[in-house]
Image (cartoon, rainbow, N blue to C red; front, side, top):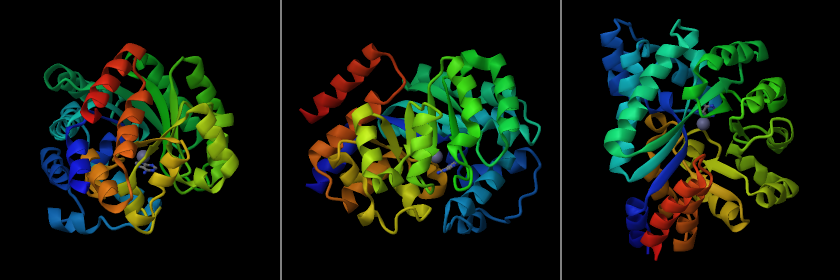
Length: 336
Ligand code: ADE
Ligand code: ZN
């Protein structure tokens, strides 16, 4: 049974809706870019850096994640990073990606937003042309920084709206509730762009309520802890709200104790529109296909569950109805 599901997971067309491009920065590339930019790293070897990839919680990961991305300085760096991700997922059967980037982290190092965008979007366009991967690019605000910093970043973003497909919110969740950014996302809404925020990864169900009621989100990133609140689950099901769940991330950041205890199957059985994603694959031990393989191997996932996951990803994607129907027909053909 597992071998059939593993085969289907490999061949079915896949979409990824929750991927931080900086989280696809592999240790080897950290060293390559450090050499290119003459940056001295605190780690002597790739192995030493990899040894630091052991986390007890979200914050421990974020400290390493922000340190790692400090090697990204030029347009070429952002291009190479994004291109490497696209090549990897193309080999896994991914046909559509919606990726985050964290502009404030790079602005702090003096990298202009235009440079970040030129590199990332340049690679995304090349991926569309040569690999056939369609894309959306999401500017994500850092919630550990101030509302003022987010508003300043949004002012910069106004010059690049043609290159931005939506807005997100990530970084340290606890102590930084969605309500802190209510005015920021009200401005984003006025721009007519969709919104997705990290909520209920480490933070309580209340943060998911706030994301829905105050930020008027189109999707929820993670959302695991919504499962603690029956009324919230009912609301998410009723609204058909997409949740971008990331099993290997959840394991690495101790959101779940082990994969056998991951709530994915319960979430699907309750009718939540769950999708599978990799979050920060260079840090969490695998790209999108590895996340599918991990849940197939560790959970009582059925063929119908897998089919539903594949469909949910395209249904939750920010693409036209016609594109959705085309991808859904391709998915259904694999499962027919
Ligand atoms: N930034 C990158 N990955 C993240 C995660 N899993 N949660 C919050 N912020 C992040
Ligand atoms: Zn994330």
